[in-house]
Image 1 (cartoon, one colour):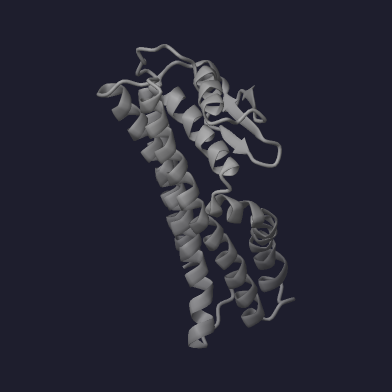
Image 2 (cartoon, helix red, strand yellow):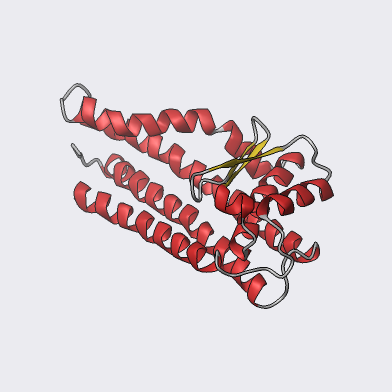
Length: 229
């Protein structure tokens, strides 16, 4: 059963990743009339929001774009930094949405930032507890189940808090790009919506997977059952 569970959750994640990559690839060929690059749009959006302490940097990892609130740094892949497509502008504006959230002390973002350390620790435990404890008999099965349930519960809650953070950033991105004239109504706006909506499903997939694992380890504790996997 644990193998079935593993392949099921892996399939959910891979399907979401495939969908976002396919959607991004399609709309990376959708031009925008304004011809602004992702970096130019990002600079303008941050300036419009009164954010002057965020650095925008380029890196070469495709779809590794992110906003680092601790360093106040926005990282854009080369394709989005220099790209002028609807996909490039959508991703750049999404990361600007996170910077705006940070400036406004958006509660879900603040919660996610505060939970990073404990979540990282929990993710390490869910990898090592089965190998070092439950399979070797060093940890009693019920204790192992309890630790795994708690750790997956932490990961599940982290992924749950991530959902409003990501969807709000995308909502802000769509509105700002239209308001500032970076994209036109019609094909350009539809392309941005599709790219950002597809990206949102990767976070939904992560939440569903963590919820499944959380319930898998929690239910035996509630019913008195025992599992060694």
